[in-house]
Length: 249
Picture (cartoon, one colour):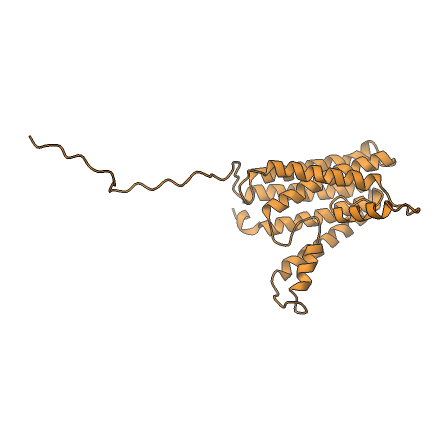
């Protein structure tokens, strides 16, 4: 009854930011230093690895993760191309798909293991695919300063608008929360990886599925595109058409 009052889009996106921290911890600690959500890290790693010189940096994992992230973002962009602004059933479907991909990925190490380079690259690919779709959905929802996957722009805004900067002081609470939650997610992911990396991914999946359920329940579902037809003028008692006067007998 009070779900719509208690659940807000910024809150949901902040929860997804926590999940990203968990997923990136798994990627870096268990999947050969691969970032599933932070593509800047992968691009930098590939740039350094391209110089050769025995850097020992991974190449396959970051390449696969980057390609998969782009595929996930492109797929979500296609689905949301004609969706109305704000939360819609399409957003719920995409985030539900992210949760299911994460769930399947969590089961992967238990089924096939993650001891080979190919298995780790496949796991990184599925995680990045999910994060790409999540990031594109968050971009559609357009919650200021919360992209759910990176916090560089958030930190920039926090510092630039602080008292030491422009002294605007706006959005500080949300920006601080986004940074704190991705740090907390990374810490939680690292702790869960000590038990098993699949458990960490499962925790992230639970967060995403909870966000999907809460968002779909709190927001009205809209499946179609916003109407482009001109508004119909309301009927009035008087008409501008000339009236026909019949001759009297």
